[in-house]
Length: 340
Image (cartoon, rainbow, N blue to C red; front, side, top):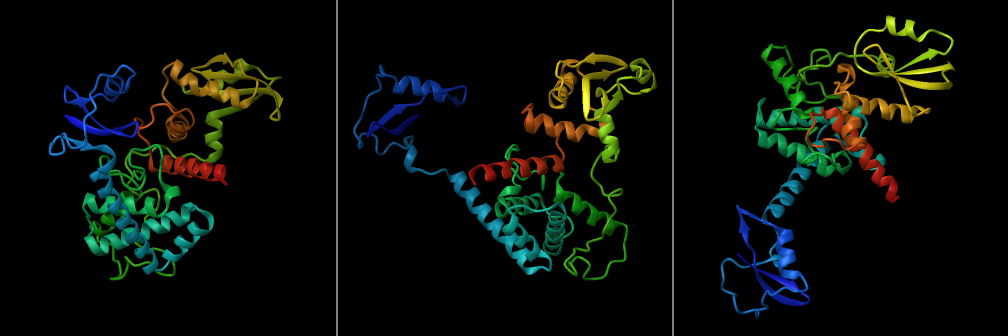
């Protein structure tokens, strides 16, 4: 394939070799632009009629143009829906003021959009419709876009797994309709600033396999346990159950920790670090060293750390929408703060 490029202010035609259906850019660069390049420089008109010639800097990406047009259209759709529905203006105003959305406001936005989606596209919208709404959300509200995921909007709608905040809300609506809930004709419209689409309790919302719910205190106890230095370590190990690793902080007081241990399967592994941050780093890495799975109640917490903090298996881990949302919120706000 002949490619026309600009090189040192000159037009240059080069031959791009195809190997097994692919083009190797590095091989192309070394061959054509090295100091000893023998590629011939040809006049602008020599191959002007060649159908295989591409002027790289003059032909914009057709796919990119289509995607940009789609994003602009989706953004306008979301903005129009929010401006036309009760409670939608609150969403727009909060983002304009703070550059972010609280959890409650994000839920309110999702409910408003799903109500509009069902009203206009039926209770089982196509994947294309769901993706349009998801694209519109992260285009209208850039700080909600996850910079680590492939498309950036998977926490609102992920087609392969059919998950995300939009999908979850749609499943709730669909389930209530199947159950024949007695809903007023206008029940899909938000009233008094709050969406009222077949409200379901968190314990019954269809969100796939659930991890056991634990309180914040229980979660902390699964991560780190304080142990007074005057008490027996052996007695502590005898009274503990489970094989997932956790930190044992030993000291006279919680504010004065002398040493940390990783406890795993009733064994003590001394931490090299004598500060909590370093000890927790060792705890996290112990899962990989000993090939131990995460505590099922803390899997989302550890997954967030693995992908966002340690950058391990980014894009390969199965992440909940909540994990992606928190990462987007953290990273986007960090970038904004840096430039401010």
